[in-house]
Amino acid sequence: MVCRRRCHLAEGKGRKRLRPFFVCRANSRYIDRVKHFLATSLIAASLAASLPVRADPPADPFFGADKAKHFSVSAAIAASTYGLSALVFERRQERVVLGATIALSAGYSKEVLDAVGFGDPSWKDFVWDIFGTGVGVGVAFALDAAFSPFMKPARQPGTPR
Image (cartoon, rainbow, N blue to C red; front, side, top):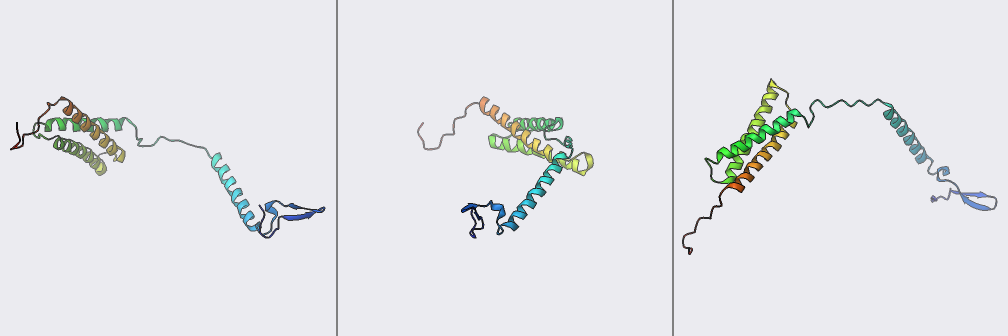
């Protein structure tokens, strides 16, 4: 790299040769800053690497026995509500909405009770409630679609038989 001031060119024994870029006086302030930054970064990195690393397990892990309970109970509530709502509703959409609403309401109520002082509230528990609700409603919907008899659409008036 040759600077615009040609300070890299040096005279020596009848020929011109390039000086290293860090000899140039035009860039000396920049180079000093870079050297200072690199030295500071090297010291900070060596201090950070020398600190002991202690990996404590999180107080509320995302995968744990408690989360499996939230998942399974939400899935059971959602699927059973979907199944019981088949006695009342004909349309599958209404069954899905009712099953998901009841299961999510149960999970939300549990977390509200935990927040009030009956336990330890956790957003991770509610995430697993959502996953369980989706799986429960999905399995119930799939079983309903697979085993329900095919219903012919209602005949419109005025159409030939």
